[in-house]
Length: 197
Ligand SMILES: Cc1cc2nc3c(=O)[nH]c(=O)nc-3n(C[C@H](O)[C@H](O)[C@H](O)COP(=O)(O)O)c2cc1C
Image (cartoon, rainbow, N blue to C red):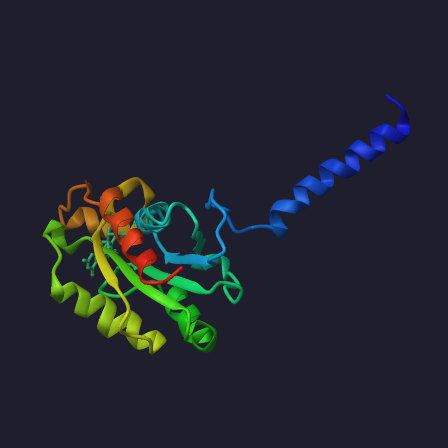
């Protein structure tokens, strides 16, 4: 191999290594749309990420899906759905901080909320909507009167921080998986209908 080709190759691979840093947000959406939708989620163990992706799937995959830990710039989106996993009745501190920090930008763009909880494996009802959506997410954003949904999630011990795992195992909580893709997709469809084409 010629020296110049070798050096060029080296530079190209170095560039490829740098690229993922620049374009960090995962591009989940397979379909283009003139409507700019984003789903913002906060998760510890991944069930809320899956709910977010499945909500987007219900919208025929047009919503891009962001983890709040990436601190995404959502200002270019017109329609935003916000959801968080629940621990001790609230979403993660990162999501709470993000919503406070970006309150003005989000004000006219929020089209829906969701929360993912365990609810001791019991079905969810209006009580959970009040607790996690109306008295929590809506209080943080100041935006109410949009559709919302509370989903039952999962417990996966292998994904928990060691101290949390120990605590949860102490409660003799079994692992469970109550998150339903069909319910998440249904909510995505419902949200899409709220914005006229
Ligand atoms: C430490 C801890 C605290 C939790 N607190 C609550 C709670 O207050 N209310 C509730 O309904 N579920 C609670 N859950 C259940 C989670 O909300 C449920 O497992 C959810 O699917 C987690 O979402 P994630 O996988 O996106 O992190 C808790 C789970 C853990 C591990």
